[in-house]
Length: 309
Image (tube, rainbow, N blue to C red; front, side, top):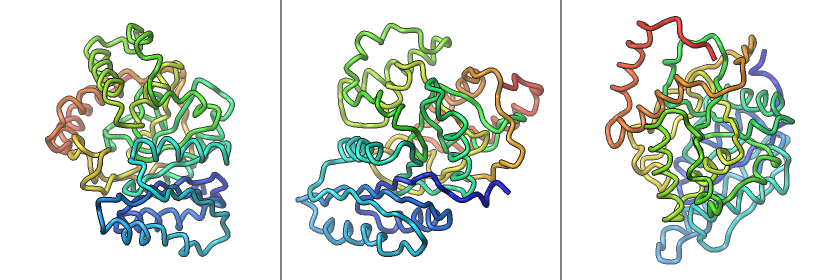
């Protein structure tokens, strides 16, 4: 059975000052029993007295590792902020290991998330066009396709995996964006305009780490592997990476059958998936995603069969 495969892939776990969330995610990691666990922790903020205690409580998960596992830690004494801590932490992770499954402290994975990532990391280890594997599919279980996953140009940081060879392309400051801005990276004009505005904002504000990774993958003509169902639920109710996306928090997760893996062919972005993700994002904020997904599931049933890619 696929779900009983030993998790030989290292897991990187980013934590800060939310032990109430990190303990839940750690429990899911403990169930998977990875052979290596790399924990990245930001330091307490100097002007927030309670951070000292909360950060210590979050870091105490190191003492709860009760299976055979190599534990490596990268704990900051001072507060770097989400952007720098994530970027520097991932630099450290990929200096230690060739590939990793990556979770933040509020990204709660379904058990099938881990074997899915491990299988995809092995499948595309030496294919440079594939740059990341996502655990999040904001369409829930609405894609009625036989394939186990799709390819996309979109990247979502709520539970993912990648390789050192891909992370080496990371451009945190998006230095190449002014030259790349005119590239035709999405064929749909409205979608291309939306992504351009997103990248413009990230380039000018320099506040986040994940949009620069999205850009870095696109700049390499890279693809993301996305499971046909959602495998990660963001259980956080606040934080820099959930602001504006609250309607997508706590989406349900679903089991992904990995015993009969069906790969998409050809290896191209799935246009239906990308169009629906665009529609979800532009219709969601700050509304709940649930009404959109309910209507989407009903509509998709009417248009079968669809492009199986």
